[in-house]
Image 1 (tube, rainbow, N blue to C red):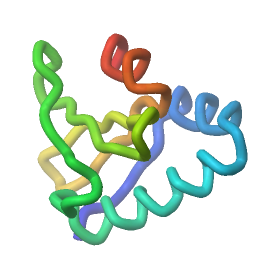
Image 2: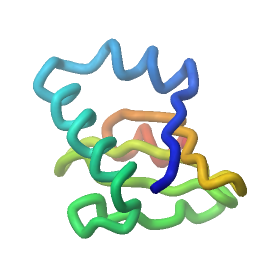
Image 3: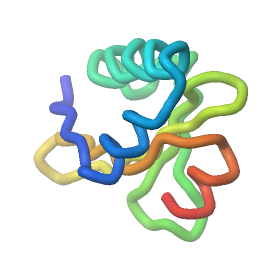
Image 4: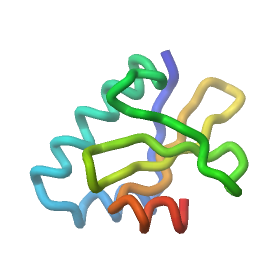
Length: 88
């Protein structure tokens, strides 16, 4: 099971989200920690951003993370889809 770490940027963005989206983010982080390939996450690499992946929070929101060699996932961004992918 991978270890989850949070960038300061991720935490700032998370704090600005509506409470209902924060709840969804927490649920998806639990799934990510248990199984990064869980179907509801719909994880995929972000083109042009080597080693950075996106995971689905809901229809409109995504979070991005970096896979590290020590089986750590660094959560980088949580935002609406286009914003998250534009600056992963």
